[in-house]
Image (cartoon, rainbow, N blue to C red):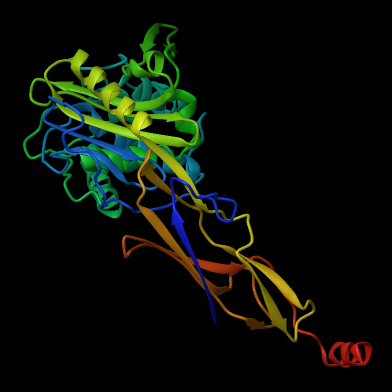
Length: 386
């Protein structure tokens, strides 16, 4: 196996070789005193890498109010993408769901609403009644659904979260953290259907009876902050004012979370402050790209003599503008591969390090099936070459 080493000083490197998106680089925290945040807890994370650009008590266990509904939203979206439900599926509501109170869209009991209307009501208007209606549909009752919420949280690595209900209404022993909320929002943002509703400022819910309820997006930043296209608010006396939001400018998407702001104005201002800090001071640099060949590998006893090989995943890095710290990318790839091969077969590895620490290992793979030469074809090839 041959090795190729590429040293990368990101502020001056021409990234014509590799481009893409990176996962899991969360151990470099840039900001400490650069941003003044009065909320109890906050975090600013770059979307592709998961790298933390600012943090304040980000793992502190706190009530997060209606940001709890983000897990309800995620499970609903996953059910939709899995084909277990469609947007026009009708869901029969219950007296329990319609009686939730608090933030609601005033659904009627024992009538049919479309899944789309209920999902949109939760995403836009943070509706408690619609959230419970979804929970009851998917798991029969809210308690069973909450067990599912906690299981999914563990799968996502949300170690500082415990759900008691699906709405975020005050409940003993229900808590989350700014970091876990950012992880959750990052997962939600992967779903295209979410964006269809998260960017709507005003709409209306038409009830089966013909009655109408106005829907206004609780996240004001989607209207007033350039690039903001998703997020979830939360507000109770216990939790204070909370907001998880996402914004994209150019090639970089950021996720900000503030928990425990003293008032609604502060949560929006401090979220915007975090975004401003991120976009002004950081940039996303592309390093590995899945559609650019890493190398060309010889094929032994195959119907072709050589094949281009590719990184299995994209990789990008976030750097502070003007920062001279660099990344090193090393490529290890086999000199020759014996046919037959299958698409996805690993033939090497890309290793990315920063300051001597490995931050990512990416398999190098063959993207196509390569058949073995038959005895007759081998003989014919020898004759032709002779």
